Amino acid sequence: MKFPIIACMEAAIGTLERILSTVSTLVCGAIALAAWVVLDVVPSDHRWIAQVVMWLFGLVAVAKSIETGMRAFVRWRVRQAAEKRRRERDAASLAEAILRAEERKAEVEREARAAMEQAEALRREEDEKRAAILRRLEYLSLAELTLFDEAIQKRQQTVVESVLSPLPKGLAQKHLLLPPAGTQVTAGYGNLPWLIPDFVWEELLKREKDIARRLREASKAARG
Image (cartoon, helix red, strand yellow):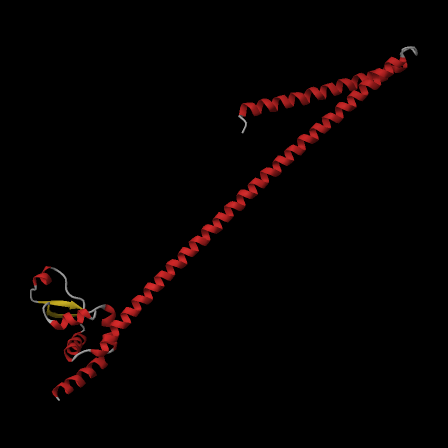
């Protein structure tokens, strides 16, 4: 890459060369024209000198005109080639930027699909776990049916039982109840609220009549 001052100097030198070439062409042309004008008034003995001068400077003027035109044409071709290379570089840079953008877009789409697939897999896994937990409602004992039936009748999503009671602890092991938390639990103090998970509670409300029926049947079977 050229320094600005060097580029300016080269441009100035090129301009000066073009000016000098034009001036010299004009001077040669003027001398040839002057020789032609005075050709008739020159004595015949020396007329050949005027003819030689006219043709010599005329040819020089023509040659310089051709040279100037060729140089201008070469400079024009050089500029055209440089402009073409610049456009090609710009097009290549644009194509590369578009390619990188497309690659990034594809990468983002792949990441989004992977995240969606992972989320879907987790959702399916959670649904399967919940379905397995809800299937345990089909195998409740009389005490468990009684506990859930009372909660349904009261429309309370919690049941109050001792933290030491085997009934809620068994249901908690089946993930049908959530044990209470806090210092009272570790200390084993009194009756505390056990929470029925939301999805279990929703299913119990749907099975209200079925729970009541099964409770009556289990009670009747227990009485013999």
